Length: 455
Image (cartoon, rainbow, N blue to C red):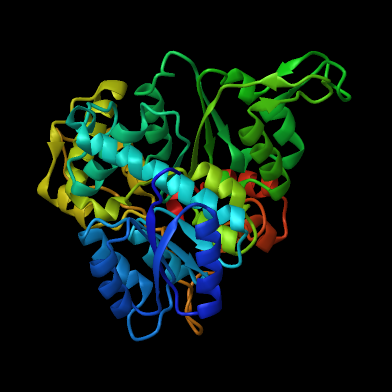
């Protein structure tokens, strides 16, 4: 680093702050000061004008690092968080400020410097896009519908990152359109004429993970009657989309990290390494920061994937897009089913606007499809919103008919899924809580009609 970048440390524990100062100085940064409170940090920011701020969450005084982060956004000073606090509510509050990095204590010296390198790269990318308005104009993105400010912010990020080679991590609840965004990034990149290969990490048992990703040679194991090309080789020159990356077991995470670092693979049973040129886009509906803090996701892999995060807002936070999306899906299903429904009645539109959409855009799409098929007039006058999204538990002493075993099993599985935040597979997942194999749980969910939008 030729010109040393100025960085301010905001940390109330002197020993920790001093360690950070030594690491940063060794890494080539100019540490302009250490502040132990938000008030002290404000004074130093005005006087020293740091280019970066490294923030702890818990500080001296009543204000937190999160309070200070909102002020840094206003004065356009980039910041990163470092904290021992892994409480879910705190992590969500941190995420809302969209920091350039988040690190859980304790950490390795190397991890801090890698996080800062990635942060500087992202910041430079974003500034380049702002300086060159041509790259900052939203292109027409096929299949992405809506005018809400939250969606426009996502499209701006896609404009910035799509033409680069950068890894992208797409986060958001189930049904928010993560796969559509991944395809859009690929379609607007220099790799668009090569394939985008999709891997659903949640649906892959660990025993098949290696052969699916890396392939195998003939005779590598019993049943390997011919050579199989894995997903990495299939995506060579293109993009590999790793969906539900948060479900990947730790063993598989180690192997994936090795490929990302070395850019080469070995087929099972093979004796030569094969170079692969692949751009990685990953997606998850889980908080990977929380998974890292709980020891279920590798910190080094998280940094490799989280170079450029794109967070998709839930539908309930972009309700101004509901009417546009509903009309878009109506047109689509009119064509598919040969119907000619003109639109939505006032009551139907009010129902759509006031519903909370736990399953987001996917749930809306399914609902419009059903409504189009069931409509008996030229417009959809009302919609049948799911009654089983949050089944109320029977009250003690409540009389009436007993539930069927199937209903009880459905309720029990949905409660387990809700308790796990929708995680099916892996440590802390619903399959582990219910003490059944993930494959059995998937088949039960299919049989009982439990779809992702239901939890």
